[in-house]
Image 1 (tube, helix red, strand yellow):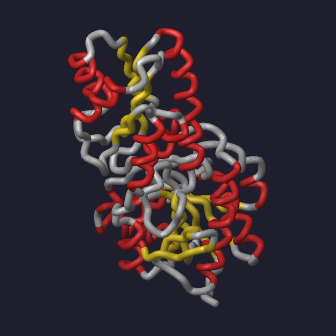
Image 2 (tube, rainbow, N blue to C red; image 1 turned 135 degrees about the vertical axis):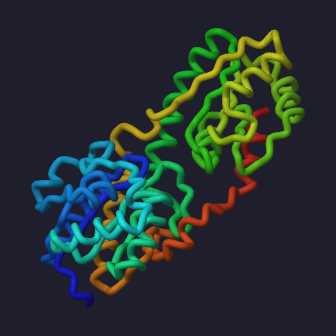
Length: 325
């Protein structure tokens, strides 16, 4: 086993429900293996400013059900520079941190990959992002909660759409990935789902809206925020031009998708991966993201996890077409 005595844990990038459950799992697993734990506030920025503190069991009591992250999160331009990373490393050494667990997404792991190679510090990552856009895990921490938040919101929107015979265009998060839009669109019974991975055929969209069931008193179109035509408002404008008789409205769900208590699935996922991250460090692993693939713990090198080439299953798009009749 690697000679690790003090594990630093931090969250970075966008927050995701389940990050606190992940922090809790890392802290308590490390303590179980007689390791010290150092919490790093505000991610890489906290490393540079030296914002670190010792954590114990009480530090993570009563947080598994909370959204957000008790360690805070921030972007750090200074960490992008060699000088900034050197300051961060020196601060870690001052606090006797000899291994790291990074909780975040592709930006977090890109920084961890460079930092680990420059200074030789063992780092393992936990996938904390609502976008589910990392290779090496079936689901990322926060994704399940986010799509359930979307479904709950769209169900409520459907109620008012039914009452007023309206067409609602609902924009969800996913600038580089349409997985939130696609899965929640199927679950919410959307008439169409528009995602960046699949080029939108406007004529086909108009045809579907026109030829759909005439007796439907509501229609829902879900759009991922990164979709090429410019998002929900642009599609709303185009649909109003094509169908002036439709009472068309736009609703942008925004950051509510990141908040709220994590689902049971996200809590269990974070707990399993957190334990595996600590055990992986003790087994000498480094420069990898810990995930779960087909129900089993998996380790994927950072450079592979962050490639952003998660394939969209075409069957999901077909399901949307079939079930929107």
